[in-house]
Image (cartoon, rainbow, N blue to C red; front, side, top):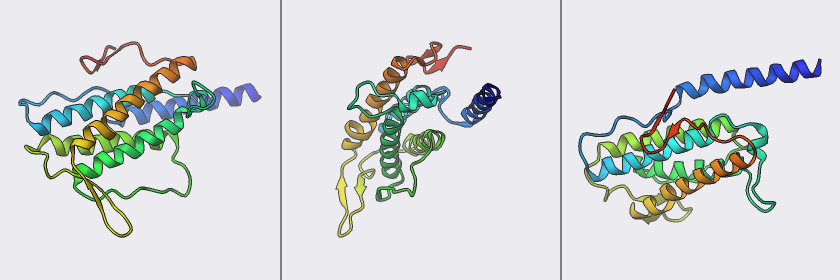
Length: 194
């Protein structure tokens, strides 16, 4: 009976994951823009990040989420939480609103972290795609007494590139936990062969 319940749980979770994944952005990278502007280049960088995050986190198991490469390393779920927090900074810069560090009564689930992170990337990408100039897209950290304003340059070498780094960390960790990413992914073209 215990085996049947375990198998049923696995099948149901795979079904929910598959259904949820189909509605998430970045299964493939969107069609490239017709022209190069500062905004379309940043948008494409975020799309590439979204694609990498989508596939680095697709189909993770509870074992993967708890996996650490070393004893003092963060487990994958903690890395995903960190990437989510950086996606919120990118989103808020795109929306041109002060970033307020989010606190939750309980940690977000794997599916929530994945969905919210990908949605944040999509929101930011869509906004930047329409922007000709980036000067007004500062990162603004909301403080108790005053706000700290950081130029958008820091978003590129900060949360955007740091998130790319962590996607590689997640991919490496899951490979070492025995669940490598889909081998049909082509990061160069941003596609998946069926």
